[in-house]
Length: 328
Ligand SMILES: [Mn+2]
Image (tube, rainbow, N blue to C red):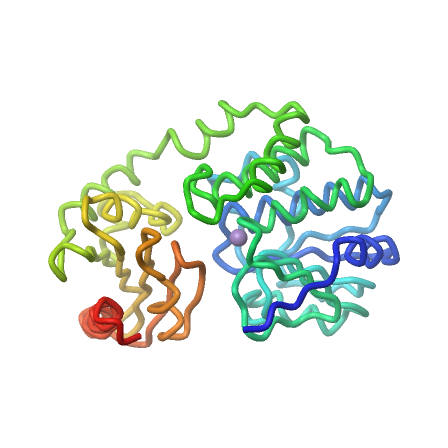
């Protein structure tokens, strides 16, 4: 594994030297993707940049639509915008950007800010460091490096990024620095309880009904060390849930005593299945996701397999068992 790392000062210098910037992030954006992209846009505004475009393939999920600046995002469907610097956050390879990737050809410089374990990160300037729990943690640090005051709006975005990617500071990715950055964000005057309530303490009736189905279908294998459940396209119509509602539902089965890894298989079509994995520190979920061309973190990973659900389930569960046997 190579970790490409430049220092934060070089990142700030790259941002300062650009006049026209595009900020983008990965497909199926999560809280870290949306929050970090917006946090960076706020930083750029604080630096006096007037020409900043936020762009990503997918719409902002409803869960994050309240973030200050969430309406700045445009889709890549129109003509690409020429820019001096294209910043890719929470992703280190261009295919992760989906339809947004072709815009990079219209940029002078590609700057990458990410925290994923990535063997071959892309970017002319890279800050890719997996010791950060969230991309938002890096951008929080950039405010100090750039000597730009943290506004409440920026802090709300970056706190959302960090609190979602760390599972409320519960994942083992959480380090002293994670809390130090969070402290800066809280000091900026954010409404911690309000943000937590929005993110974690409410769900739509549709999501609740979907959760009930996922729980009912949960099966334990390997002497209770692994759990899995499955979701079909009809479940969304039946329950009124949408695809975003499925995020993190594997956490519930991971919480079963003795379970080291929990999976939710989602049928996306006759020969397309997505698996989401959530693991305790006893299990490295990337060993399974990476094997099938996916990725993520040791505690949370995913992959999409070109197989019908029952076949995808079979090969993934075999891989999980091999990992338990020390053969992966
Ligand atoms: Mn992230």
